[in-house]
Image 1 (cartoon, rainbow, N blue to C red):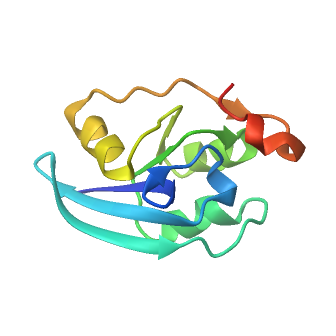
Image 2: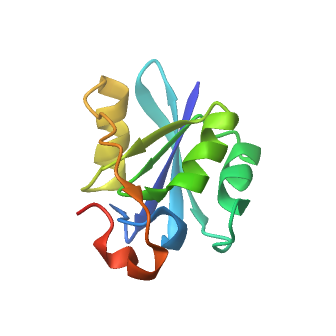
Amino acid sequence: MIRIAVASDGGLVTEHFGHCADFIVFDSENNAIVRTETVPNPGHRPGFLPNYLNDLGVNVIISGGMGGGAIDIFNEKNIEVIVGASGTAEAAAEAYLRGDLVSTGSVCHEHAHHDECGD
């Protein structure tokens, strides 16, 4: 089983990982989604969310953009990071399972200007 978390706002992939409304977690078997769960974002604190998602058993995180610190922690936990995604969370997860979703490496450097992530 692969567990994919998508940082989302209203079912859409969010531009900024840490400020998303929730994470939609997709459990997949044989490249098909078998279960979906929405987990509210417990709050943005440096270093907290990667560990939180690791504790949920997530194997892959998908977002529009993400800070370098979070990416480093996910890498340490062997959680695959896909950034630069857009559209609906479910479509992003399905594209990942098909092998069609490739990370663009869109890293947010300026948290004060989080609206500009992904530019």
